[in-house]
Image (cartoon, rainbow, N blue to C red; front, side, top):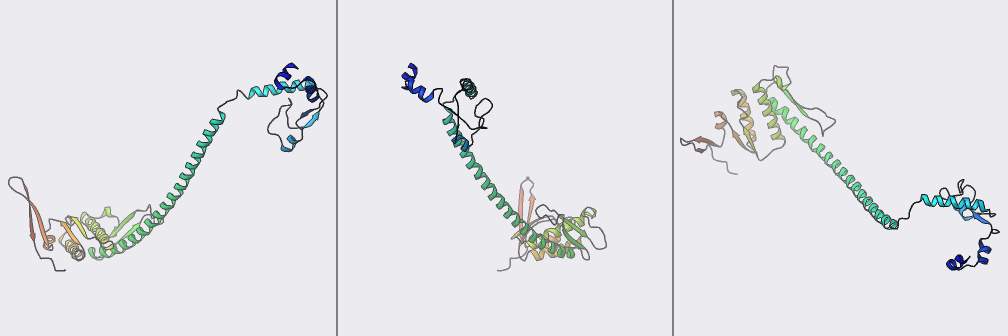
Length: 276
């Protein structure tokens, strides 16, 4: 009684009146506590608002006290820095959530850009392939009179991953695989493909390095005819040892080595450029 008076300012009469054995004990509604009388999980809001008054039973209250003390001990020691740690973790969580959302939006934007680029690549490739394939058939027919050549897509349904195969059948032959053609025929097929590219997608100038080295006079004459057509719209820089190729050039440049081992460039203009 003296301790209650000193610490709480309550005398014995007030304590007995408010908390004596005659005062009913308010406990949680049925089902809101476990067998020891300790709360087991969150209370239902309605049950918590309407506690049930029971007659005071000292043994029952002591049992509930011991159960409550055990439950309190299970909670462990109080962490005085819990609020600060929670605030720091909450801030970190908010930062990571924002970063994750930013990455998700960026990924969606990149996928959209990739889709647009892929669509554009397919469109450009399809147009270029159609033009080159048409030119290849025409050029092949000129270099191989009576023959047939064409370009074939390995995967027509996948323009981003498809390859391009060359089918060539010179006149009088049933072969279509390039590996079965002679060296001169393979060279001429390669030249036909290059010229088809030049005609489908013209360029200001072309550099050709001994592309006619393996050709005989007949095939060389056909190739020189194509050179004449290309030179009308573009400048050709041809490296060659063929005299007939040199004869159709506008200017010749040769490299010679003197007796002292020094290289000398010799030039000779064969015809004057036509006025624009």
